[in-house]
Image (cartoon, rainbow, N blue to C red; front, side):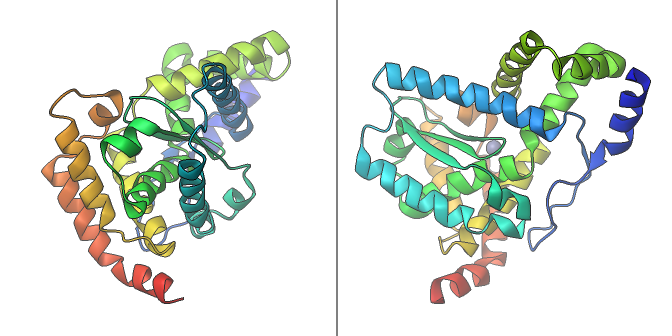
Length: 267
Ligand SMILES: [Zn+2]
């Protein structure tokens, strides 16, 4: 049984999670952790953060702001089918949490959190909010979280141990709870690789353009972020360094996809 699992994982490991589009993101990915596990682990982590924020009266306090963020997010979500049809059926959730932190994320399965620190400190325009959300949604579509969890689990316990862990995890409820805690830890603790960041940048710009948001806002947003990082570097900015190379790649890609934006706007 365990040997069989190992073989299945090795065979099914190398895939690409999204359809190739104008953004030309087609890298083969090593994905071992089953999708349902990544999703349920993330769901658990998201529920915990929502519960904590609610307990501290930090969740969705500014209704106008929440409505704006949700309206922008759903325009982007209306276009995720371009990259993967199944994501249209994800149970998307968008929440805003009061926090000084300049941060936002989208967990596997479409669980989005935006921190007010990001909105306020960058004084983000609607196009710029779309740029951040598009980038974060793209990480989820491309399943960078599951990719990272897969790599980390394999590194930690080895391929055989990993298969045993999975075969136990699907049976015992204690193990499932441990797996959920581990999943949330892995999601937050492991930074995306440079290559994953480049993919999220490209796909995010395409999502923005297709949803009728100015794709050049990615450039202005990351410039603002860069200025913030001079003072104190929060986690999000240290994992998303807005160096000149990145900014110039963003603007080249934004210009390339400008027609998609114009087409979406004229609809
Ligand atoms: Zn990122």
